Image (cartoon, rainbow, N blue to C red; front, top):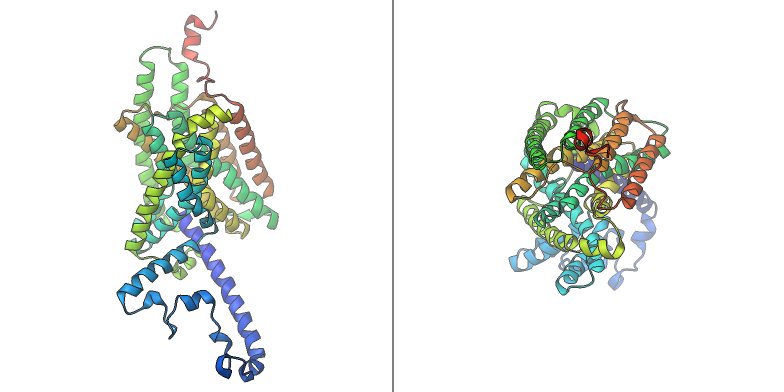
Length: 465
């Protein structure tokens, strides 16, 4: 939902800029109309009209009569050019699509068995534009489905890249990668993205405001999500180190995950149906009426399937090369999952959120930063726990003690900053500083640091030796 609103507002701004440019060009054309219409400098000595000048690309894509080939009467001509036309229009939707050249290169690197470092870097870059295309296809498919179903589709597939990467890592039993990527996605949204939004907007405006009611609701949900990770870690710390400890943590995690999924469904109903007016500001509603759909339902569906398959292939090679990266680059799995992988899934969306915040559309920026974090915390993470239950993988909500404390402190800082419904550049610097401190801490934290103090073992007689 938030990503759709941002894209609509962003495109609307671009459309208004283009219309103003056309008006200026029209005024200039009227001023110089007499010389232009009396100059016989055109082909065969005829009068030249400025509107008749077309680019080489348009001439190549059109018939002699000016009809585009993708609108030709003959199907054998129309369909191939329609595919080329739509492909070109899709590529123009986002500047990061230039990185799509890395998709075939990354897949070839994996198939040919190139260096694990090359496989990781190439597929890391390749997933960035694929994530942008995945979001675009989801939003295009959501347009004809209506507000409720479309919003549900956007909410579900909003973090599809992180979900795909985590499912592949879960299949390979890389539990640390899954947990770190989930926590990293949350931290990057609530600290890095929100901090950049506050800072970028604060450089242009002395103080910015946003819907405090929505911010308060999101803060409450974030507190519940934080508690769902603190409680398993606390239970692990106070329990004795015995055989039933892991079983009890597993039961608690699975039960908590089911409750969080129920809360997420209720939150979707709250956001999309019962209290939708709180989340739809006037600018987003106005932009929704002017938004132009590029793809039909079938085209968007095909694009969604193709991009999802490409993301899965690139993610397979990305996750498969992590062990070699850890050995050669001496970087912990936790740092890769916590800092590097989250950058992949939301890079394009994050940049767009910062641009929107710079234009003083803070409700949209807050929706992306906090909304995406909530989707990860109360939907994706518990879903992976339930999926691990089905796949017989020991995926739990018991994160390492240091990770849990970092998440709690980050959530506390963000809740305190957004509860008043105002922001400035200093608050942005606070978020960015907090994220940098956490990133440095996880960079020096080894994977074998352990789970921390076992209070149950300490208080039952083994701590005094």
